[in-house]
Amino acid sequence: MTIKTYITDTARKAREAFYQLAHVDSAAKNAALLRLADLIAQNETSLLEANVQDIAAAEQKGLSAALIDRLKITSSSLKNMCEGLQQIAALPDPVGEMDEFRLRPNGLKIGKMRVPLGVIGIIYEARPNVTIDAAALCLKSGNACVLRGGSEAFRCNMALAKLIQQALNETGLPEYAVCFVENTDRESVGAILQAVGLIDVIIPRGGKSLVARVSEQARVPVIKHLDGICHVYIDEFADKTKAIDIAMNAKTSRYGTCNTMETLLVHAARAAEILPELAQKYAEKNVELRGCLKTREILPNIVAATEEDWATEYLAPVLSIKIVDDFQAAVSHINQYGSHHTDSIVTENYTLANLFLRLIDSSSVMVNASTRFADGFEYGLGAEIGISTDRLHVRGPVGLHGLTSQKWIVLGDGQVRG
Image (tube, rainbow, N blue to C red; front, top):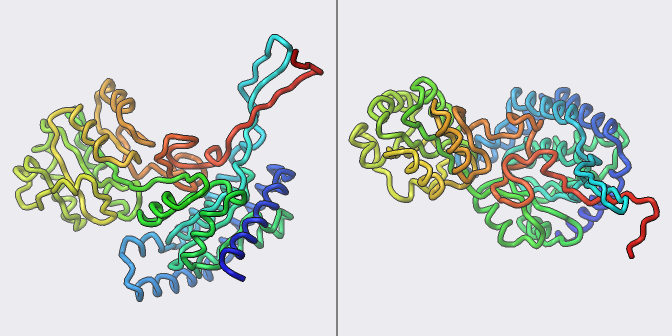
């Protein structure tokens, strides 16, 4: 069997399962999710062993530290997976929700019903948690999915896929509601991207090259974000303690995530007061600082920032710093160099905080909070299937509602059009 035939056959099975899911109620879907959480907890040892093997192989191949960081799971990671499954099970089922009804003069009642997108193809690298998050969110929202993980996490992904199949079988749900592609050849990605009529939408999760390839080659709609160039702006009216805590957490909580701060902006009126203390704390974390000319007047020992730095997603312990003259300069910098992912302001000025929320063109905009909160789990979505920086259909962390659309519902009593 060729790879194209294999993907086509897999997508067809997922399509059949999607139609079967229309007959499955919320209780049955929730039972499958809760059973999967139990199975993950019961199989912690074997899952961690599979992950250790994946990490060893990744290190042998010389993969980057950032990718290996995304690949790694721990007992805490598995606990978070289980909590995410439990949260998703507890969330209201969006499928079948009806709203916006209006009564027309002819007696027709016209409104909308929320419905699944269909068959969702998820192409991802490294993170084994995506296997669980994607399967759970798609299942709860009534979608079937075709999961194609990367070779670097193949052992752990396969172990998780087996538990998903076990949960589906034990709770009587369609076997192919979640299909895992047991092939890591690049050709399988191309086949998924070309599966018009079988796969309804593609969601890529991974590095810039993967997302760029998916965006360029896909013949079906794509939900995506390309970069995570996130900013924190410390305003003239910032509380110093909050500013330092947020700036440290946004950068050093984790380096390899898309919601990590890559550029710190500081109002000129506060730079001399705040930057030396921040620089000392960053030095303790071995974070390399790259600054503009004004920043280097305060921190003369740091590296000079270039134009390229402002547009770079480091995914590493590197941070660019720029001193801005005023609020508008910060907004202009973010909108010019940012990736429309997540940006935050630290300020006690209510007017400027609200203005920042309106003017920043990003999928998540924050006031007095770390950018690291831009996450489906933290937003109360149970989990996320990805982040979207596009403007159509869904934006920001993609949870249950982001995996649905709406169709029109017309309720009549024999009316005919004249």
